[in-house]
Image (cartoon, rainbow, N blue to C red; front, side, top):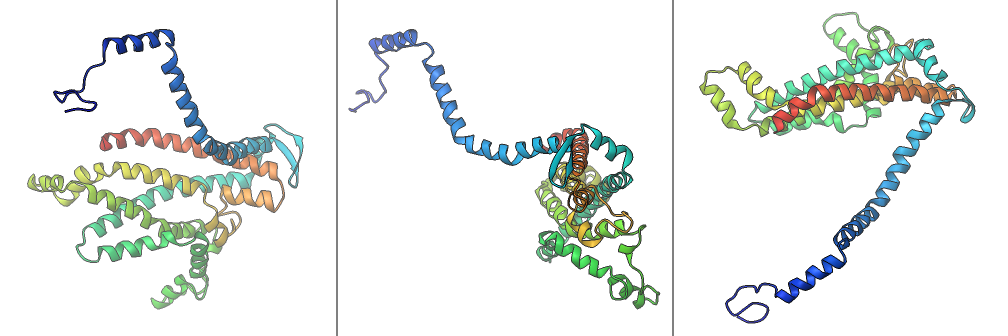
Length: 329
């Protein structure tokens, strides 16, 4: 065999002269490999530099400007005087509407995490147990998630309307006098009425995530539990639920982030009323900034919400992540 291979078909070893030359070059320029690696890193940085600039422009700059804005008083959209932490103290200690909105937001989030996760899991188990019509049920339950939140809020506001809404219609069908019942006008029921619409929209997404997790569970584990005499509830507690912990971890975080920032459906359905019964931090921030033109104070409330989101997310991550990693590994 000729060419670059030897006559015996093997690749010839480097000659002693070649080895000496390579050693001499390494002695003369010992930092050459490091310089080459440094140059490659520089090229990599140049490739990702546009992305870093975009992230700085859309994330870092608004965050820094928001902090500066929250420390100033404002006249309309014009900053006037530096007030330090007075806006924060005013929101936390002296603003009853903000305190109510923060309580509503946290309460709404806690209930949404429990009910939305539980309902999504129930629907997933229901759909997974059917042999026929599974695709149709998956489509029907997931369809509300792809609808615009403004459209969902408008439809449910119509359904809750007195005289011709869903409650007066169903009540009249069973002989009840519910023609004037208006859940969105009742301070005791308005927040829970919005919660029902929120669950209707997002439960299908949780169902799809759980359904994918259920279908990924090895069938041998369930069959082994059946052979050992485990019932349906025992199989769920000992096999299905522990293996769905990574999906639960992700859904709890996503539901928490979405619920703490809820604005659109609340604004369309009630605008924060009646009597601030459905006021959330997001709707309060919007009203303060664009109705009363107190931009600096509204930004301080938004920063408080950001801190609350970070704290709750960190707590959930610490509590749930370790168990999810054990299942994933």
